[in-house]
Image (cartoon, rainbow, N blue to C red; front, side):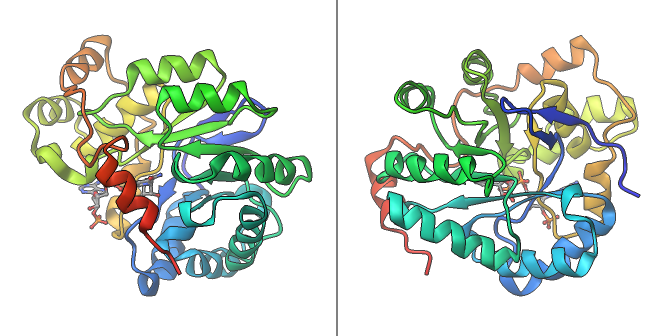
Length: 285
Ligand SMILES: NC(=O)c1ccc[n+]([C@@H]2O[C@H](COP(=O)([O-])OP(=O)(O)OC[C@H]3O[C@@H](n4cnc5c(N)ncnc54)[C@H](OP(=O)(O)O)[C@@H]3O)[C@@H](O)[C@H]2O)c1
């Protein structure tokens, strides 16, 4: 049986587990086993992307699991190379086929780059047809998000952005909340950058609860109502990362973690022209 989880209700009434599992940088050859292990551990929400190159392997694990479709929450994303109205529709069909599904729970625009307004028009149609139960975006800073909302019919249900103790996105979350957009964290552990797993503040708080730094970070995020999708290829860590519903951080502990904010990305700046050029030139097939 799946361990306890909490459901978040998106702006269209769709329910999404607050804790899911991500498969970025899981090699294609390892992904089927990793997702099989994650489903066995109790995860029901899986986050992949066309650009991760492992949708088919995710699909095989889902099919082999025997878990009822309605118990699962499956997300994938449209890459920049495939923005455009017709292309987005075609790529959606391809992703759905790769995953072996007849609908997606959440389809995201992966980056606010390329002709993503046309993609959004296609995605609004997919949503209207029930092929994507919810549609959203990823890596949208506030200005891009508000502009997309203002000039379209459907407000994104989710904005998946880098969010962790060193880049906390409090103001971004507030803006999203004002527009009915659910924040979802990618890189909840900052992939271990900036020595996250040995950070003295996090280590001290973890020791006080008999929990790990990873569990404290995930708990801090879900107490902020941030959806999380930690990645691990190790079953022991998959179980550890799920085991966050039996303790609570105090206001003081939340504030101490708040003090770790650096105000900048641990990865790269999506507004840096060199990065925009690099991302836009990346081909995924
Ligand atoms: N939309 C986007 O642009 C975007 C970008 C990045 C990520 N994402 C999504 O967000 C998901 C999560 O982000 P992420 O994979 O980049 O990084 P992450 O979840 O912050 O960190 C993953 C790293 O932490 C390690 N780890 C996991 N659990 C641990 C634990 N309990 N103790 C110690 N180490 C632990 C993993 O190692 P092991 O695997 O060896 O355990 C891996 O090295 C991705 O998988 C993807 O689905 C989206």
